[in-house]
Length: 263
Image (cartoon, rainbow, N blue to C red):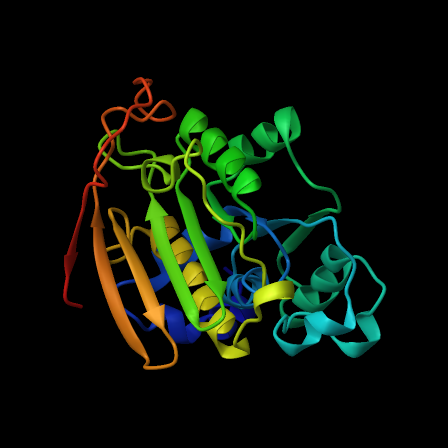
């Protein structure tokens, strides 16, 4: 790091759990962020400000007036522009010392796998189960840590699936693709703006901890927030031995292997 970087990141460097070594790890890291909306916006802001050296942001959509209530990486003047381009401009104003690459398409197949393989950590900030499961399969295949978040109405959740650990559950263990999960989108259901800020910022925090090896991540736990009462609940997750994605087992009728604990 040069003198300007030492000054810019000084408040992180002062933390003994991070220090210069941790900050250097972030500067040398690559995070793949899928989604530049409600969750991706705060996550990207904190990753950029913290000095993650390379961010790849994927989103096919344009900025719409209805986005501005919560997607804080975009501005009124960004309406009609691609979200990824709007986000890149904002992030490089915050920190011109990082690299921001953009993919203005809905990634899938080989393209998704190539992007996941090239990243150190993947953040899922999408809003549909099809994409979530595709990201999960790629992370399982290439053993990439996955930080997953969701927010709708006043309810938020976040978890980490550290797929470098053979004992870790994957997203499919928690939400099997064969089960019928109702798609809930904020365009129909509504969402409390600060909620996506809380969840997206938490995703950034988990990604930074994974990259620097700092503290304990949410691997093996699902953290849920009721923003109306501001109460958190933590649910323990276990790997599904019958999961066809991370164990290769046959999909079968099973109990959900979770136990609740007070947080």
